[in-house]
Length: 148
Image (cartoon, rainbow, N blue to C red; front, side, top):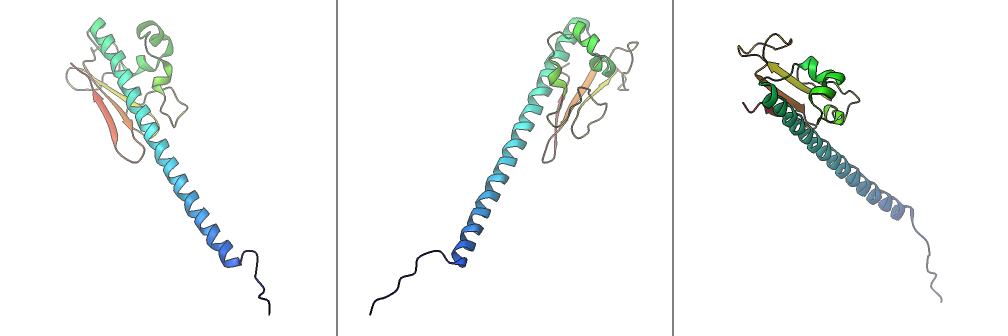
């Protein structure tokens, strides 16, 4: 008597294969999201560093820091901070090229103060200190203060 051999795939084998593919796809997606988050946070740190460099160069020349309104004014930046690339002002998850007064998600913050520690928001008071802040994906903040 001849044995009949079955050829083909059973439904259980197909289901096992689909589950394995699903697990692998989930791992790939999770890994990619983590990589994107790390890249964005690295970009935030780099942007804050470049902003700090430009603010310190301005301070070296004028012995004060610019106000928030100055830094957010494109015409003013073009005259006074020629080395600052506009892209540095934009958080990777935002379309805005404006710094905020207080730390917030998807924007960089520039808080500038006068000698008494109060907010320096006009040109009458010499701005002597600042804090730059980026809110990181996954929690936390990246903060840089003036060097002086």
